[in-house]
Amino acid sequence: MPVTVKTFTSTHDAAAALSSDHSARYLGGGTLVMRALNEGDISISTVVRASDQAMTRVDASGSRITLGAGVTFARILAERDLAFLHAPARSIGGPAVRNMGTVGGNLFAPVPYGDFTVAMLALDAVVSVQGGLGGREIALEEFLQSRDRQAGTLVLAISFAKPGSADAFRYRKIARIKPKGGAVITLAAHLPVNGSRIVGARVALGSMAPTPIRARAAERALEGRALDASAINSAASAAVEGTSPGDNALASAWYRREIVGVHLRRLLSGQE
Amino acid sequence: MAKTALQFQHNGRDVAIFVDGGTNLLVALRELIGDMTPKFGCGQGGCGTCSVLIDGELHLSCLTLAEMVAGRSVETLDGIKDGPNLHPLQRAFADNFAAQCGYCTPGMLMAAKALLDRNPQPSRAEVVEAISGNICRCTGYEPIINAVLAAASGGRARA
Image 1 (cartoon, rainbow over the protein chains, first blue to last red):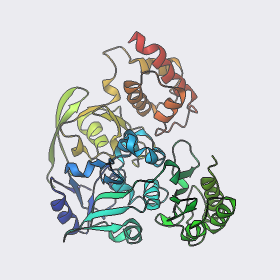
Image 2 (cartoon, rainbow over the protein chains, first blue to last red):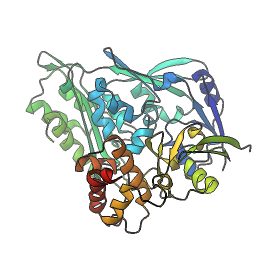
Image 3 (cartoon, rainbow over the protein chains, first blue to last red):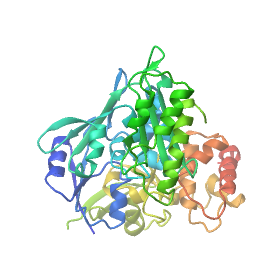
Image 4 (cartoon, chains in turn orange, green):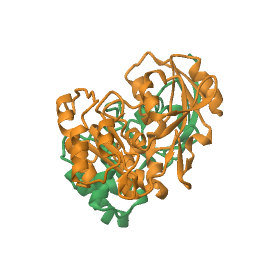
């Protein structure tokens, strides 16, 4: 069924068009919205686009990094300053999907996709959104909790503090098809160290709930401790707490619950 | 609903068509321009057989809104041969038995071309990565990987 395509030069106008029409969806790279249209999704009658250059801007020079919502995964892979994000970017799709898929769109990607958002959640990212009434910043965790209601807001950018060291940020995606495939589970951890103690531990999981979630019990098990065998064991046994994975063709909920601790242990102990 | 006028370069030739809102590039190429080389596989971005180059970059035409290529250059498999002469990649695919049923072949060739255009001497791992978004259910991939490597080492010199 034909839809109306509205393209705006200003993000403000695009946001207004998006918020005033419940059947409007923002089209970024196309990997989610075009797929829905191809499948005959009649809930979408208007497609909104914005050509504002700010949507594709990368600011990675300082300690705080901002990625425009329209930045593609291929672009992230081309940025030397974003080397710590190359593993999550590379774990998504094949080259064509990485040339198309965007950071902003990934926030809306359902299980078994949305791997990059897991990395963003572990980095305590903040999402800049433009609604019909104005712009605001919202913590990514809060954004994900209300994701179903966010279709009417325009995501402008996502920002986060750069990890202090290369070792502080870790990422692991478990997939049955390598090098490409949907996730069985996805894990990311940010473990800033002060002295020898972890301060501000963040562990995020993908495909362990309808949206990426933080593994707070695992975070508590790591907080204030050195990253030794005992802390890793405690975090691994706590990884499954608070999760609610589902069954899909890649894995059952039972299997996901069984392996999440195993893979968190491997992630934290630096095993392949 | 009103149609939208769309102009772009198709294999180096300027084309102008009218598209319905929401039409994807694959439908525009096949049904409005008559280029049947990009195939419809899954419509979900999972199989890669609709792959084309947009301004030299590999894209999935089934997930590309046709209007997004306005003023840009779209290259399909139909454009890579030189008159009656096959492209070195096509010749290598034939020589290495890299096509069986042939359905994935257009996407495989475009993904391989995207790789060789920027990296003329790829490693085996780089070839595997380059075609990782393209599904083949016949060959087991090995003949395809060998064909791309053969084109990289020999075909380019002959081209």
